[in-house]
Length: 394
Image (cartoon, rainbow, N blue to C red):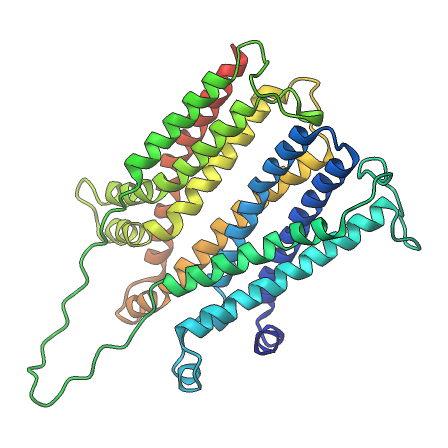
């Protein structure tokens, strides 16, 4: 009940982010139900049904990542002294955020179920009743238990990930009060952030993903592991390679962002470049991982366009829905992480403005950060896309 009360009193932008999480959950739930209808309508094609289910985990992971990012920027999840006084400490606030995330995702799953049954023709009396009966396998019964289990995947995964992320995240604590016998000293300024350690592992996984794709894919467009349905010309080696490359880019993203910060501060920097570089170094872990993930998604989109954009290959509506979910959720996650970073820097920015720093300096610093990130990540995205498409174009 407390989670519902906080949701009712939230800012409209906070409610909009929660509705976007519910919409993404509805899209993933619809894809999972389509996979279940294919499995129930084709009981002899178990391998094809399994591969379709594996394809659904890409939008599912993107939705969970977006839900975690929204939970981290939720104002109701921030520790407050008034809430701590009534027993809502960091652990209970994390549980409250997990419940709010579960409610949003459950709403989306319910909408997906109603929409799916309506398009199948199981629910009548509304426009477009049974419009996609052939595509959704209306001639085969839908197992209710399996449908509920699949629909529960997104709420459970998103709530668990949100709770763990907020519970293990840094919680600001007040410094201990000094006693009369202690010597009062000036606090030491914080040192530079430690560089992330995942860059070598990320590079290794990217190389492994490209090698796996080249090994499992043949030059004539065929595959050792063909995928089912209307995407039968897409080799499973591409899926495996892109998965490893996506994990590698997510691991390497913080290290690359930290490198961008160091790059900004090289060659006799001024005050603005120092500020921009220091912010990137401090926020490398927070925005680096979403940057790496969106680079993996964009590289996959560029490679897919290079392979099928000029041909007659058709992906179909379900594949298009999955691609829109992955691209939309990863982009929204990056924007939400940038908002979280801005909220974390609000006190520092206010202090700089009170000390006389011009507002234009802060804007130029933000523009420099965005420019150097684009200059580093855009060529990397293009290079990985070209290497991913190369085994299927030669």
